[in-house]
Length: 233
Image (cartoon, rainbow, N blue to C red):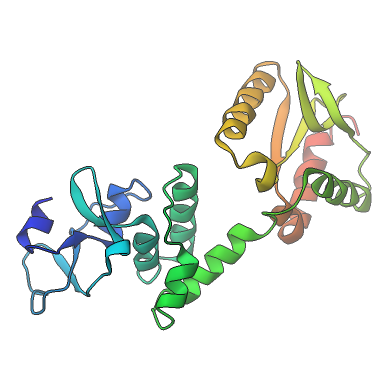
């Protein structure tokens, strides 16, 4: 708050400092502040960004003027590695921090922003498999299993009172197929973790697989499944 006050009216916490305040990343460096005022870049102990921001890109969070979550991520994209940006976007999604202004809107609003390429790449990765249904994901998984020469698992089987997506009962291996269209709600998030905990306590090994992983990391997935099933296959 002191850094924002030091820059006067219209200053807002931004960039990595804003991302830390939103609890999307960890940051212990110099506080970063954005202001529309000119000639304030040399403020000691504060990293100043000079840019006027429209009203829908700023807000107040825990009493501090700050860039909105989408604007914070947008700014972050130009200054951090892509993997850190992906983790921050994921954290924003888990914490349900989105507002009406989307990253897509900011891409259209600022077509020459230096972080655009990283934002587009991160969004593309997030959206792969986002509209896949449970049945489509099951079919994709069974094709992967058959193509690898693995034994067919039971599908939609009951274990410890829970229905699981795929099951190798002799090996006590459970696979949960995570489609964002069916696992993206707060209720599903809680239910999935309750099931994982119960199965782990009962000595079942559970792994979660997404459509994107089956498309991009099929070889490593098959290798992992082979290792899990190796004892009795």
